[in-house]
Length: 467
Image 1: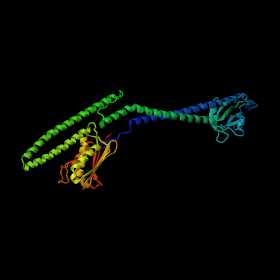
Image 2: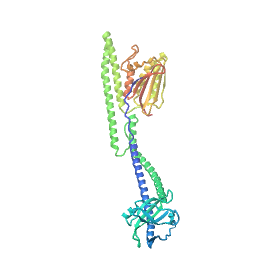
Image 3: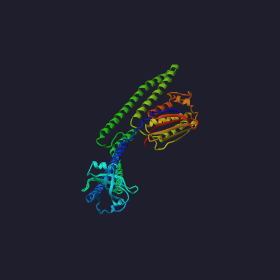
């Protein structure tokens, strides 16, 4: 299949609104996660400080009530019932450091029953380095899976020269449950806050950038021919931009009008001498006059072709116009059926009423008309025309006939300007070349292929306007 295509426009990147929203959401989410972790950690530390303070009070009571009689350490009779019940989760012990750096329990609480309170191997060294200060640590309790929070203090008592180590411990499961509950509640609260912030950020970005979105739509309307200039009210930050865009549109319109004027002047300047040459040749018959007349006619056709191409390029650069596809195809079909009525030609066309060509009516009639006329000329009795939308910006126009068609190697040749594979057929051979040039002027594409009707299929991709 022969293809003649215009370069496709570059694809845009992610939208500014999306990038800003993602950046704001990511930053907010990271901030909330860090804040939640810091709050949970602070709560845990505060809970442990309160827990250690309770154990410190127990140590103070033990130290104040412990006595030494005949070298034996006697513990006070505490009223804490939990310390009296076996494996209750609240324990204490009065111990002494051993020469090898360990700790030997002298008086355990009744709650330890027949178990011992485990201590870190370096506890004695740590307490000796900080006498009188509390040392907190975590140990395993006497029951399976029991975790204890413990504090210890290095102290001395009257009547005993050797130092003592007083240890108090308690099951830390309640504090761990409180920390987990707080972390869960904080996570839920921050998740709800994060969801609210995300919604607020998205709304703020959309509202903040809505003037830009509206400006983009107005620029698109100008390009598609729905309006001639930007007329909306915009914030002061965007007002200079809208004024410059309006000035650019006005300048572009002036440039297009100048091009059209120059093209018209050129047409008059060239056609008048050509007409004079053809008139003079017609009045003086002869071999030379025949050559001059034939070549002048070719010159006129070539001038018409290039002027048509220049006008199409100028119109394609200007503000968009719209042409109803169905209306033009119906008009062309009726006209061509009358022209080819001697061969009983039937033109079957189909296009929706809301399909519009983004360009001038004259150009679309020339594109579709040349293709349909070519199909009518070579077709035996039937021509099929279909116009369908491809997307919001493009439409497809396909013209098929039931004629002899073209071999693949011939399709490239017929697009070349003025090429004719059958010199006996009427015309200058510019039909498909004109279609190709006009399609390119509108950044479209022309493809030649085989039709299931048996003849040639001319497929065009053209710009589409909004209905």
